[in-house]
Image (tube, rainbow, N blue to C red):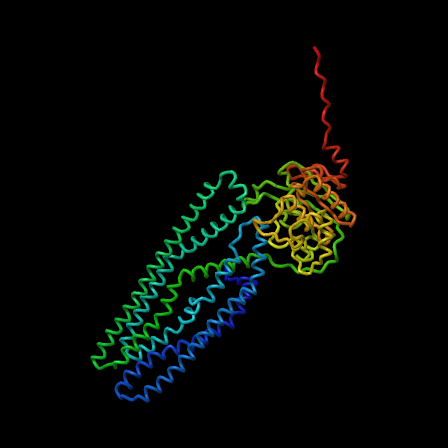
Length: 575
């Protein structure tokens, strides 16, 4: 609830709502378990007050048989509630996991920092739901039952237990207020440290040869040390309150024994009531003690749940889409403007400034320009990898968000400038991990990219596994397999960002041939290029300068304007 307005429904909120039935079942099982928890004290009460005074062995045997049955039922109910919570955690993961993964993937394309790591937060919530701490929360509402029993035994014992419970609750609140900020900050610092570790490992190829390891290691050590220090402060405070609560609970039980002994001497209660009241009072405080002992995990789960709610609520509403007919390849770019990421929108310079052009099926556009002219940003905008701040891109007259993700993906081929293939076989990567891909389509794409023979030379051909840090491929081979992935299925709209940055002469020829094959098939191709060989097969050229279109038109006409002949060297004057 925010400002009186309820938060909108999300996949996560709906998944939590569907768990209400499980929570109700666990609540009923917890009721049975907590009632049956009185079996032990009541048995001891009967043994001390009836069996020992009467000396009746049959009574003792009958009571023991009843106790056995009651404890069996208690064990079954305790098992069932743990099983229900474990299954509930599993169902939550199954209902939310795919969407959490998609959000995490899409967050890589946004200019804004993510609220958290939804997969990690989901793992924390799932682990907490199936933990003993969650069952301890279900036991808390039954504390009044045990207090009522102690009052029945003797009001003085009841009030003593209530006073002890109040002390334990105060300790729990103090624990929360004193350690909450430290636990939250430690989690944030741990997330930043994890990101830095992943980042440093990905860039190890440059970090290690240039002798950056000591400096990078020192930065990680500082982050790690600071995170541990903050977490340790919170842990120290939690541990101190946990130890204090535990010691006080034992003291309270001894106090109740002593008080019960005094009342027994005064003939106000029986000997059996002394032990029973002590056990029941200890049981009344057990859930609080358990929750305090698991306070760190409870705080982590609460923060993870809060971040998950905020993350899912921050996602844009999904627009209804209509199954549009397959694209023909008419591309229209209207006034696309993209600013440098930041909070101060009025101070951000544009990366792209009112870029507009049109292409028809069979056209191939080469986009050239100096570094930082906006070529890669334009490529990302064209394939919907990032959104334009102004203007838009239309494919066959429809904006890209009018297509479903799957339908649009089948129409687009994209080779990014920074290419990293995924763990899997060469075939899997070319087929875009489509489980329904046919071998014929995969081989066709490889042949269009001119990489079929090269793949056959690999240890296992198309079945060669591409595993991180052990892929037997060079940069040029990876780029050519990435090209095969881009042309898989002969998409109607292909964007290639610096596709020949790692290619040799043979690779350049294969790239030019692939562009020609795509054009002949009616595909629209856009190539971002620095090297002239990348635009050998295009029919149109656009020159970007500082994010603006400086020239656009037929290739030969534009190149004549932009490539000026060098003046002939003048003969040196003779003496």
